[in-house]
Amino acid sequence: MKVAIAGAGAVGRSIARELLENRHDVLLIDKDASKITPRRVPGAEWVLADACEVETLEKAGLQDYEVVIGATGDDKVNLVISLLAKTEFSVRRVVARINHPANEWLFTEAWGVDVAVSTPRVLAALVEEAVEVGDIVRLFSLRQGQANLIEITLSATAPCAGRSVRDLALPQDAALVAIIRARRVISPTPEEPLEPGDELLFVAMPESEAAIRSVVCA
Image (tube, rainbow, N blue to C red; front, side, top):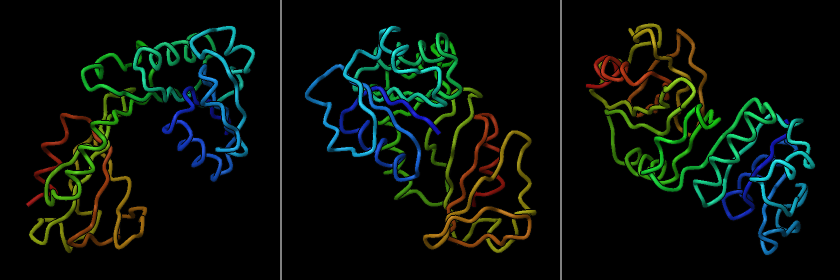
């Protein structure tokens, strides 16, 4: 998969390294010459240019990329990059970093954003996930369908603990996508038993969360 990342700061470089380890082709774009340091991310392609300019993106061949990530520290820049990627180059998947929570409402399909990742919200969710057992923790939103990725850690008294996945009477707009148990990621099957301490990951519409809570939480 070919992935273009706008923003070669610490966040952009970290994403690039992870993608390269998974054998994807990565392009890093930044207008700050001090951030163009190929030795820090060997294997990536680098472009010194303004990713908000259509000409730059045309020269980089953005139309050939399956994913574009707006990973700069400026929300305005990430929005412009997202809009150009989607409308001018028909990029299939656009992911944008949100730096300031007050701007979250802007990161929608109208600006070409398929998935918006709020750094403050993710950090807060990770803190909650570490201490909250038996309640819903929202990890991030999938803007295209206005759905959320949510996590619930099963308590010892959870009504579904000791039962199987097939016994979960989930609402229509919700799906159990993974179970994390003892450093393992388990793809849920109908027969898989649910155990106290399991971390359940769901994709669900916001209006389904109350029903999930009643089914899963004590």
